[in-house]
Length: 127
Image (cartoon, rainbow, N blue to C red; front, top):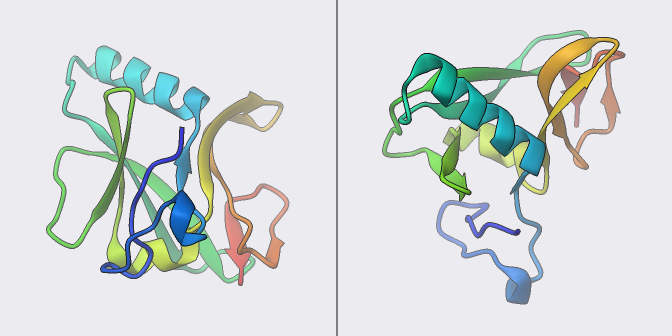
C-alpha cells in the first residue's frame, strides 16, 4: 500500500507525480498495534524523527506519541498512524519505516535510500 503525503509540504505526491512516497511496512503496523494493545491506548502513534548526531552525522529516533502538531505529516495504514515532523521529513522522503527482530534485538528501523552511508547498527546515517 502506498500512502500519499507531500514532500515539500505543499507539493502533492502520488504515483502520477513521479515522486517517491514514504512507506510504513506491515510488520511496523503490526508492532504498533501490539504496543497500542499493551498500553491499552488506541491513540498511540509512532513518531519518527531525525536529529544531528550519531556516528554517521544524523540519527533516527522513535517514540510513541498521542499528539499530532500542526506542521507534522502523518501516514495512516490499517488503523495506525506514523507521525513525522517537518524537518525530519526532508531526510525521510522515499524511505520505509519497518520493524525487525534479529540478533541485534527487536526495533523499528528506517530503510532510507537517501542515506549515502550508515553506521553498523543502522541507527545513524549521512546524506
